[in-house]
Structure formats: structure tokens, C-alpha cells
Length: 228
Image 1 (spheres, rainbow, N blue to C red):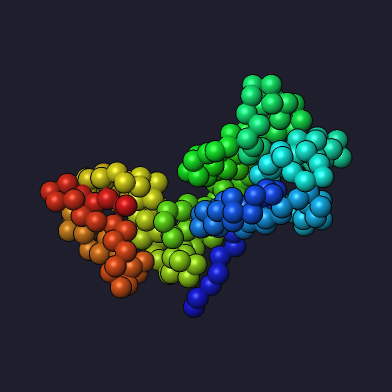
Image 2 (cartoon, rainbow, N blue to C red):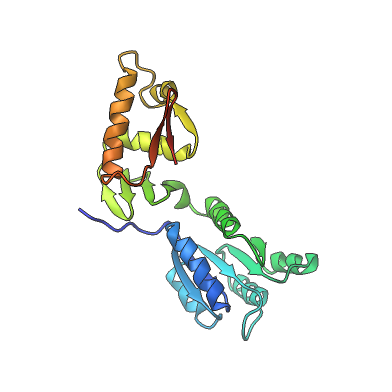
């Protein structure tokens, strides 16, 4: 049965450049986050009351300066982490951002991958939700429920297949030798043959890629397998 997964975390972006706002939303949603975008602080407090895990805030905003708004929220007791994303990039301005309640500061222009890395790092420190999920490309593994989703659709895996896919995702783009897989998944059981590894991986591949067009797991001749 198809199932839509819950988002990894909810992120509020306050950015008055609508093109940049849409770009940030696109990349964050692609990573599995729920994203709410605002071009001013006008509705921000109402959104925060609904529950948000992280704020991305520009400082040059209409009506109120971004760091002043965060300072105001901090004085009201808000503890939600904040990343300032701003063209205000002198040492004094960055220091001001942290003093006003920022947890991180990203200078404009910036690389979108750097934004994603910073978001993940902040959420790792402040939210257990990030630690309960493993994700790569369009695959998400929920460690608590032991459920697997591919492109937002639930895929039923056995315990062994789940553990195997988890190990591959944790070692994305690394070649894993069959001996390594035997030791870490099958606990180096003497009765387990290398052929068993191949059979299990082929079964897993059919479940997560029934059309055989995504090539998540590829063989590396004479060595083992790689998740890419």
C-alpha cells in the first residue's frame, strides 16, 4: 500500500527575494523537509505557534531587520534554532547576528549544498528527528518504525534487507567488500556463503528498484558493491 511519509523536520524560511526563497524551498523539500516560506515577518509568529524545528532568516527584510526580529523572539522565550542567511557579511555584522540569537550564519551568495549541510548539522544537535531517519536520494529509512520509503511510497523489507540497506546508505559511494558485508550483516557466520550476499542484494534491488532504472546498488567487479 502506498504511504506518504512524515517530513524529517519543519523549516520556516523568511526571505524577501522570492526567487531565492523558491530555490531554497525546492532543495530542502527534495531532502524530505516540510518548508514554509514567508517574504516578511508578518505571519511568522503564527507559523511558529504551529511548531517549527528550524528558521532560516534573511536580515534585510521589509518592516523589520531580521536579527532584530529574532532578538525579539528570543526575549519572548523562543528556543527554536536560527540560521541567518544574509548579505550582511562583515565580521561586525556576523557577530551581531550571533548576539541577537542566531545559531549559525551563512553569507550570501552561498552554495546550496553548504546550506543543506548546515541545516542537517543544526538539526542533528537540536532534534532527535534527524537521527531517527536515514536518507539517500529518494530513499528514506525510519529507524524507529523500521519502515522504508522509496519516492514517498512504502516498500516492505525483511529485517535482513533493512539492515543491509541501512549499511549501504551509511556508506554511500563507498565500495563495500563482500567480506565486510558478511561480517557486519551476517556476523561472519561460517555457514553463510558469498553467494548468499549476492542473492540477498539482488532481492533487495528488485524491491527498491523494480523497474531497474535507478541503479542504487551497483556491483564492483571482484570486490563487492556500492550504493550511489
